[in-house]
Image (cartoon, rainbow, N blue to C red; front, side, top):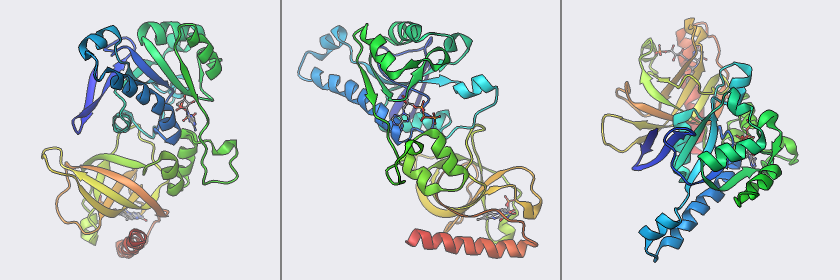
Length: 345
Ligand SMILES: Cc1cc2nc3c(=O)[nH]c(=O)nc-3n(C[C@H](O)[C@H](O)[C@H](O)COP(=O)(O)O)c2cc1C
Ligand SMILES: Nc1ncnc2c1ncn2[C@@H]1O[C@H](COP(=O)(O)OP(=O)(O)OP(=O)(O)O)[C@@H](O)[C@H]1O
């Protein structure tokens, strides 16, 4: 269906009905964020695909592959997000499709299958889901899920049910214990690493926690587009970043950031810079729409058309309405100093 690649490696993106690579070793779930808990669930299917490859070394591998094909490490998820299907409300995502693909690629996943989440799929019983989707369509040889995984009509199937049903087809199921946020005490159920907990952390500007649960910095990525070009008149030119429409935005306000700059038209290495960013409506200039604007420290030059990957480091302050551009300018200077102090530390 689609082959999304970067750096020479790629993830094959398919639906259950189109373009599937089979057989598969499958990790099941929504995987929004590809956080540390998700990464633990994905690990066994990478090992399974990798281990079988190792067995082939030294054998007549072409013949061996034909007789006993290696399963493709495959993340199976739903599109649209089930929450969107049931509520009819568009769901903002920690990792919109391109970002999810990039994160899965970096883990070594070979295929992402997007199961079209519709009335028919949501009505499948656990038995039907295993038989129709996992066995017949995906030709699944191995499965990995988290301990609290639920599936099938009204989420009535548990991870143990999956183990029992898949066992009838001799498909082993790894049930990964719940991963908790060890740094947050006491470790109660509320500390279960989850997409929801990361969204809550981002919504209050607790970037350290969100980054810890993700196992990497939360990023906002997109092309630099034209703004009102006011920033340069106050000595702080800003790159306006166009994000995917379904990207989850953290708390509005000002952040210390690390930025990776890619020029899509040139085959050059990315440039790494530090900076400050504002997410908000810019009340000082009577802005109406939400903008994401980055000012890079120690940078001069055009950024239009370039792709920026902005990694959130720390929330600095809420957005404010200033009485003049001069007052805003003075505050942005203080923001730059505060960010620099964080980077130095
Ligand atoms: C670090 C930083 C902090 C900012 N803080 C605020 C703020 O507190 N209040 C506000 O109205 N605008 C704030 N802005 C947004 C500015 O109003 C905006 O950058 C300016 O209007 C220029 O935008 P333009 O060049 O894209 O038109 C901030 C921008 C940056 C880069
Ligand atoms: N903290 C965790 N520890 C172990 N497994 C997990 C953890 N979080 C999710 N999983 C498993 O990873 C797979 C994908 O999880 P999924 O995205 O569906 O849930 P989630 O991350 O808890 O998100 P949400 O907060 O939206 O429920 C599932 O098999 C799920 O059981």
